[in-house]
Image 1 (cartoon, helix red, strand yellow):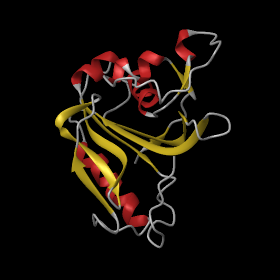
Image 2: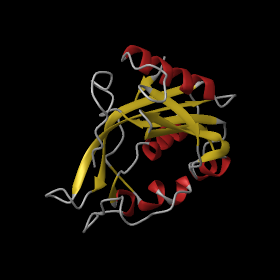
Image 3: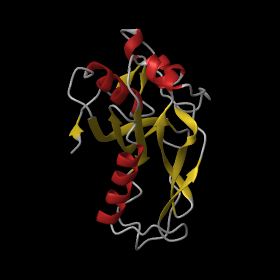
Image 4: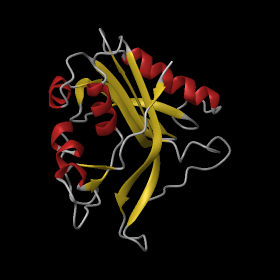
Length: 192
């Protein structure tokens, strides 16, 4: 099974963007006005950096290492009265002698079966090839719910692994879970 982790709600700008090979559009991360250290300068816009740091620190554990976390990320939102919103995300990562992409894909399928969400592009969930700097091109997919992107999964790019000092192949998924509850019986409502 997977082991639950609890990571910090703050991270560095480099961990959230540069180390993941993701561009910063300036509209995503909530920046602290007076951070005490560079390690805690923004609210995490993604759970992936914290989980990768945990995987890096647990390298000596027996392989495969399978971790997950379900908690909130914080994103800028000009429509909100406080200028930011929380979204509940799930992240899962598998690291070991092989990437374990089939394991994280199987976890996605299992979660959807438990929530009674069918694998159907119109009424349930589907996956579609995508590109994300943290993952290998051609080995990355968006997770869609009723045609709307709710997450990403794939084999983590070697440069990303190197950036977090992880010497073995890994695969991960991260997706919103706040949209999953009650989705079978409700229309998809876009939230900010």
